[in-house]
Length: 329
Image 1: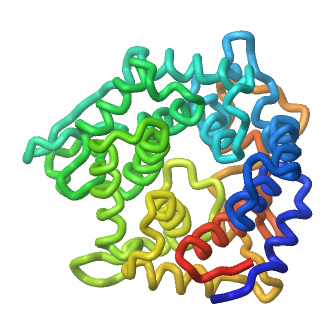
Image 2 (image 1 turned 90 degrees about the vertical axis):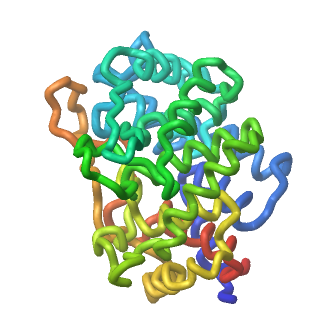
């Protein structure tokens, strides 16, 4: 077991209270009512990342573009804010969640297909992200959120995942479509403890674990080398570190089928003791530029770091390694 106290101390020196909060709670095991933790929580909404994600909010709760606009729509901002532990009672986040629910229930977002075997194909990651966000905000018992959970549960494939491919010949779940969907179910289960949801989570985890996170179960080869690059955020993309983080959230971090992915994660730690981003799905939003509907895709409101050690990637790496019994502090 590796001692990561130096790395944890670096995270504690972050200018972002969300990073300090997660380091204190997830890595160092501080109580939620401890003074340092409470102090971080009080600062999260005004932290640099959360502040950027909430900037430019409109009276309707949105941000001047459709909710799914990559990556500056409210859908994506809410996922990021939840992953920063934004306080659920934050009024601006609640307003954004209102727009999210209205959008989910709008026309054009409930398109179902079936493959030749009768499996439902749908953009489940959209519903999964919404389910996770709304559950975190304390809305798991809302009938509209329960309805979203039913869509996710009813569209799960026999192999444990989900797929949105309209091709009726598609037979295997999509890793991209399944990862954030599984995250949403875990968040929902944390809020309501439903046994049916727990079974669906176990089946979802099995999709990734049966592939040892990154390998074909037929050829034994790595399925996609792009999955092995450390990135944050990953949005709807599959990523080996995010898959291990989600599996750890489900209590699967010590599953022996995680070993090779854990070894790879440890090998990516730099000589300085930290992890860096090896690629990006986002681009910085230009300063002083107003949001327009015709903006290029992949612009991001928050700065997640593009050079040097990456705080979120390092944090997530240590979360996984601790859960797997490979890290001490």
